[in-house]
Structure formats: C-alpha cells, structure tokens
Length: 273
Image 1 (cartoon, rainbow, N blue to C red):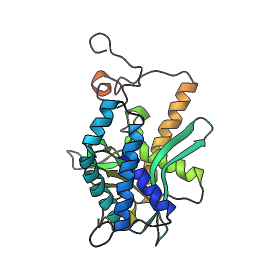
Image 2 (image 1 turned 135 degrees about the vertical axis):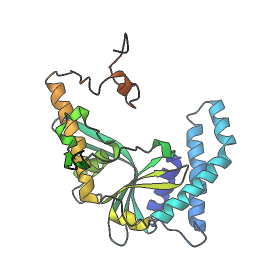
Image 3 (image 1 turned 180 degrees about the vertical axis):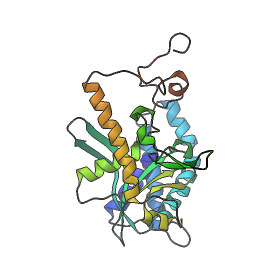
Image 4 (image 1 turned 120 degrees about the vertical axis):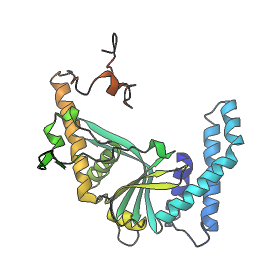
C-alpha cells in the first residue's frame, strides 16, 4: 500500500495538482492516477517476488484496489486543497553526536494558509503508537484532601514513560534540514481503516472537525524535547561506557513486552533474571 500511495502522490505532484475531493468522490483523473499506481506497484513487486508471492499478489488485487480507493478517497477528503511537497522523501542530518535519517511517507502544504502537514501511513490502526506524548505533571488528591503534584521529570530518565519517538524525530529532521519549513501539524493515517489519527495541529483539528483535545505545535514541542533529552542521555552513557541497568524498569515483565526487544542485548537466563 505504501508503494501505491507513493506513486499516486508523485503523479499529483508532477502534474502540479492539489489533492481534491468532489461531491461524488474522486475525480475521473484521480481515479485514473490511482488505478495506474496500483498496476505499477504490483508490477514493481512482481520483479522482486518469487512465483508464489506474485500469484498471491495478483489474486488479491481486487481487495487491494478496494482498500486503496477507500483510503485515497478519505485521504483526499481530509487533506483537500493540499499540495504534495514530498512522498517517501529521504532526509538526513548530522549532529554532533549522532546522525538522523529516514524516509518520510508524506509531507503536504495547505494551499490556503501554507501550513505543513506531516503524515505517516500505517497499514492498520494497531500499528499506530499509543504513547504519543511526554508525560506532564498531574495533580492528585491525597487522603487529607491536599493537592499533590506528581512530576514525571523527578524520576530517572529511564523510569519515565518516554513517548514514541517516530513523529518527534521526523519533525526535527525535516525542520533542521530546511529552516524555511515548520511542521505545524502531524498525523498517522490508518490505511486499512481509512482513518486519520491526529497527533498535533490546530489546522488539522479544523479539517477533522474536532473542537478540542488536539495539542498545538508548541504543546507538542515538549514531547520533541523529551525524546531528544533521552537521545542525548543515551549518547552520554555510551561515551562514558555506562551500560548499567535500572531494575525498577529493566526487568523481565517490562522487557519481554517491549517492541524493541529483538534488537536489545538484554537477556534473562535463570529465574527470569
């Protein structure tokens, strides 16, 4: 699906068109673009797949087409009148202690207010991360009815509930690569469910007709700052040769369910220790 969307967006961009939706849905031109993109994507995969995979892909073409049309219709509806700036664009930026690089699914710009939208596509809604934001101070009521403030920042960094880093890293990568670009809006888009999951941005909230509950650009910067605080701490510890663990969080029950455990060297041998 990512290849289909990439090819479709590239056709829109090359023609100098904006994403648009009509009363009856996609225009005949956009339908043609999408049909061509589906065929080209399947042909592209055919060149790299074995015979069985090719046959499987061809037998599921109708289902792929149905999903692609449903998704693109919703995508064009949400981002109607937006310009495609890049599709599967490659970005790379060197910093003092590390290098950031990545292929970013889609970058759009609003024709009216010129705001940018960063969109990351996920095959299913289950792939969209749930921990999108850095924790903030929360007020709680004690037994004495006194306000108690819980400050996540008071905990060691590895004990804090760190947010998913993908969106935060992409924003910094794009903005630091081009000082004329400010990513005011960000979203994940579920392809199979044809549903947009906003992360931040007031213009995006208006497009989705959501009154409140979406963070603005400045609010989301707190999450970006937290991600890179963790990155800087990670580099600092590596340079110092500090590979110690914190048993309060780096234990069997936590690590066994971690999405990154396939690349981590932490193992549990006897008695889950």
